[in-house]
Length: 403
Image (cartoon, rainbow, N blue to C red; front, side, top):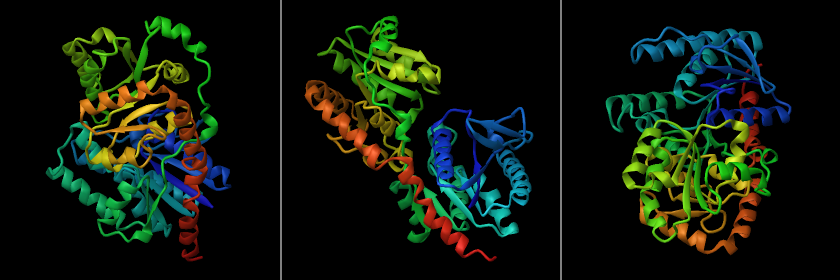
């Protein structure tokens, strides 16, 4: 089976999108499928048209000249379409597998029709909802409705739709897509790449450097987007400090909300107890995780977080880390409250304070929670299980394809 994937961007860029992609490609190859990988112009300018990264070969698309809104997207689509058609004629894939956003689905649909190749479209989030969080549009705006209409146009024209969770599946079906034409490929982890954290001695020099000796550390590791709700964590922090002066907050990473969060910490009078590390080398991330006693995932409730499941809680479970998370829909699909993690009412600083205090007051429960989380990813949310869900759809499409 030969599958040509059409991607927004890929490794060596680091994002949840690229890590999920790499995991899927490796597991598909482990099953004996032959995969090819094309990235859109949004990968950016690259040194070569074909690049080998971590054992995977990526075909790159030249970046067209930038233009105003609308014109720019049109140019991205046309550039991807031209590169895709040339590759499809050369590689002769059995399936064109486009991954969100819709800018990748449209070229795949056009090329698939011309060449008679089945097209599937995998939606990881809706482009219009991501734009709302980034502040480039508002829910219900003309741009929002136009993008949503374009997404619906695409999913009605592909042969099958994949998505990452039940929240997105329900939204897709509600747009008039038959249940049988939508399959969930759940977010997962490669458990072999995540070892349960052991001794924290290796992180001791870093703990001393950051002034965290003898402190209880609440933390977050990742990109500072508004939807992650780190502002809620800072709002809750003074209430926690009142009874637990040994607490510290460790924020590892960076992003659009970096300056706002630092200003908020100053305004709340807790800047000396909130450590911003900035972005750290990927190879060092595990050391920072080992400094954190309790991870906090306080995502705000919005369409994006209610519909989409994140990777972070699964990665935490795989490493035996404990966390408190808001009860948005994306978290509820992954977390068993009180068993594999702890949920609190989204948007409520008082509920976050109560959940953190309860976790810290009952440390005797931590070993069982760590074990339950690790079992969940080993037995359920691993890439071998998730990628197996492609097989039936691929086989059906190839069986119905004319010789």
